[in-house]
Length: 259
Image (cartoon, rainbow, N blue to C red):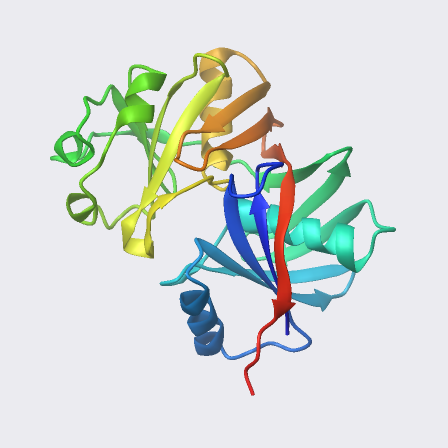
C-alpha cells in the first residue's frame, strides 16, 4: 500500500507532529492495522479508504485505535488534496467522531471538528506531584484539562510518566495556560496510549478552543503546543463545532509490503 509520513501543524521538516498515512484499496484486519501502527511507532497512523463522496478514516496509536485525531486528519487531507487529487479544495472524512471536513485555505488546511467543551472537575489526588507543578483548576472531557498559572510553567514541566499512568479514566492529560506571545499554550500526555508526550494534538483543541474562548472572550485564537518539536494551531470557536487550521510538510513517501 502507498504510505506517507507528513509533519502536521508546521511548515518545516522535523517540527510539528509526524503522522503515518496508509492508502487502502480494501480494509485490513484490525489486528494488522494495529501492528502497522506499532511498527511505525508514530503518535498516529491513519488508514484511508474511498467511501462515497469522501474517505473513511481510522486512527491508531502504537497501542490502540482512537476516536478522534487532529494531526493525522490534517496530514491525511494534505496527501489527498496535494498528491491524490489536486483539483479538490476540500475532502470529507467519515469517522468514529462523525463527518469531518477539511478545506484548503491558502497555505493552510482548515479542519471542522466537533466541540467538546469541558466541565469542572476535582483535581485528582496526587496529580500535582505526578506533573511536578502546582495546579490552579481541573476540567474534564475525553481528556483531563489542567489549568496552570503561566506559560513558563507549561514549557518547563517534566512529568513522572509512571505516576501519570494511574489516571486511567482519562485518555490524556492536557496542561494549559494563557500564552505570552499567543492566546494559549498547552502540552499533552497520554502514557497509557503509548504517547508519553504527543508533539501537537489537534483533538485536544476540540476541548481547548471552547475552554479558552469563554475565558478570553474571543472566537478566533492562535495557540502553540510547547513540546520539543512544537506546533502552531489557528483556532476558531463556532459554537457546536470548532475550526482548527495549520500547515503540513511531506517528509516521506513509499510503500508498505505485507506479502
